[in-house]
Image 1 (tube, one colour):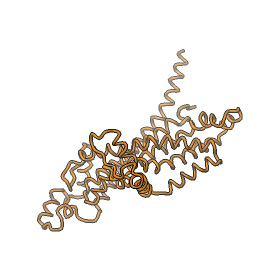
Image 2 (cartoon, one colour):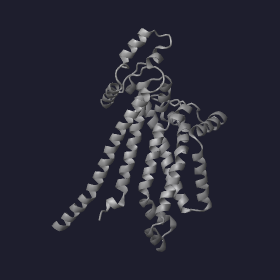
Image 3 (cartoon, rainbow, N blue to C red):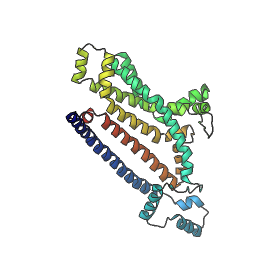
Image 4 (tube, rainbow, N blue to C red):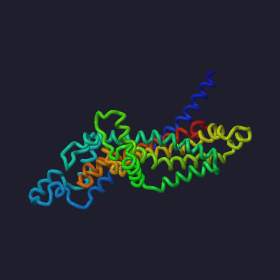
Length: 333
C-alpha cells in the first residue's frame, strides 16, 4: 500500500508540475501583453489629430481658457508622466473622468458593460452548441450533400460583413414583417421578456457572424483526428460512425475546438461595435463610438483597455483549457 501510494503521489506530481508551469507561463505572458497593449492604446490616443481642449471648449475659446484647461487636464505634462498617472489610476479602479460630460467613466461603463455581456452571452448560448452540432453532422456525412450544404452555407455566411447581416435583419424582421424592433433599446428594470425581444436581432447578427467559423473549425479538427490509427481501429471493431465520432474523435479534438470557441467568444464581446451601432444598442461599442466622435480620450483609453483585457483573458482561458485537455499532460509517461 505504501509503495502504491508513493507511486500515485509521484504520478500526481508529474502531472501537476508541467501543467502548473505552463499555466503560470500563460498568465504571465498575458499580463505582459496587456501592459504592452496599454502602452499602445495610450500612445495611439495621444497621436490622434486635433486638440482635446479645443474640442471641449469649441472654436470660440480664447487662448487663455485653452491654456488653463490644458493645465487642468495635465496635457502639458510629458507623455510618460501622463501614462503612468493613467495606469496607476486603472490599477486602483479609477478609469478617470469623461472630458465631454464630466461623469465618472467607471460608473458610466458599468451598465454598458453589463449590456454588452448580456448580448454576447445569449449569442454564445445559441452559437456554440449549434456550431458544434453542425460540425459533428458535417463530419458524420462528410463529402455527402448534407456536408456540402452545411459547408456552403457556412462559407456564404462568413462572406458577409456584420453591417450587411445587420441591415438585412432590420429590413426583413423590423421593417417588412415588424416582428422585432429595429432599435434595441434596453434599460434598468426592463422585464426579461422585453429585453430578450429587444436583443433578438443583434444577438442573431452576432450568432451568424461567429457560427460559421466555429462550425468549420470544429469540422476540420474532428476530420484531422479521424485520420488517427485508433479511430481506424474503432471503425474496424464495427462501431457505428456516430459512436466513433462521439467516443473517439470528438474528445481528442476538444482542445482545438475549445480554442476556436474561446476566440469567437472574445470576438462576441470586443467585436460588437458595428452591431451595437447598427441597432443603437447601449453597450460598450456604442459608448466607444459616441466618445470617439467627441475625441474624449479618457473614455477611448478605458474602453480600449477593457476590450483588450477581455480578449487577452479569454485567450488565456483558451490556452489553459487546451493544456488541461492535452492527453499527453493528463497522462505523462
